[in-house]
Image 1 (cartoon, rainbow, N blue to C red):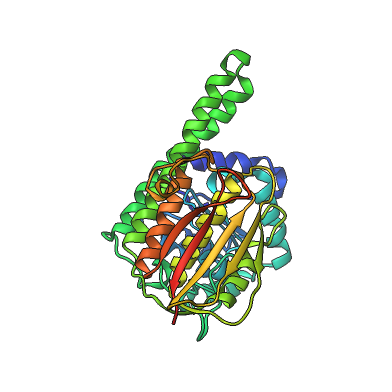
Image 2 (spheres, rainbow, N blue to C red):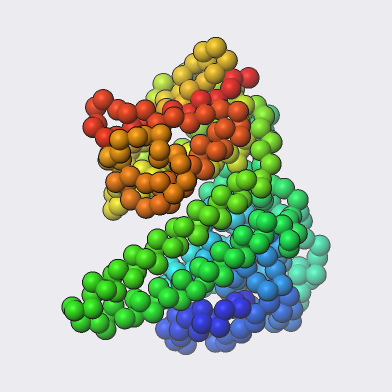
Length: 389
């Protein structure tokens, strides 16, 4: 266990303790350098690796995943940060999974141990040899894993985003924002575990109060993710270039639609290639925010999303998205793209997502517009307008 939060370390030990004699030894360190030193001396079968550590910000931790893997370990990267790009980079570096700290359990740890047994880690001498070898440059950005962005190539355009840039320094606003959010969400995670325990023991007279506190914790969690996203967006170079929109959409839909609970996304009338001015990071943020809003409006069931791309007109390409997630119930659709606004679909995070999407479209030289739908009162389609190449 490489974890600097003593409360969360105790939670992890509790989960591991439920596995009984299957776990022979648990070693706990608080810094990644100490974890690697111990792993080289006595290779672990499983490493539970916190993403943000005192000696290692997230980008650096992701670069060290490969050291643990090549030393013979199965790695679970644990984080309080909701960061699809970091998750993709972790998997590309060899991590088995990127796990939300609030969702870790004895069962997930046992599944990782099952994988470690199948992988058959290298013998100690072999592991030490691997661990001492130079690390290859980390793979990140698009095409880096199951949840990553579009495949790289001549039609996908330049890659942007934090993982595609030179590693930021400790004073970089992105690093500071990540550290601030990580520390705040670590506290919220611990708070949520305590609330869950209280809910199990509280009587009916306290059930409403506990649920209200849980709702507050979830809202704060969403605000932290949204606020960090805003900082990351505004400090990430746009690097817009030619992107073939239809092939990007096809790849994105295939990746995003995997899994039993995922949204079902349909591309209507694929037609000929459409090359637009965009960036991979911008497209990931924009389309991802729209799908997340649809899923948030339909808890407990997959949603259907229709995507239509129009042929270029007067130098512009329009992309429209509609979903069956229900109405927003607002009188001013344009107000939903203002930060911290929301409609009946729920949380402030939805408003932040639309605001981030609009800002990315503007920074890529395009626009985002919400169009009221005639078939569903209160519902809207989203029109993205790109410059055609």
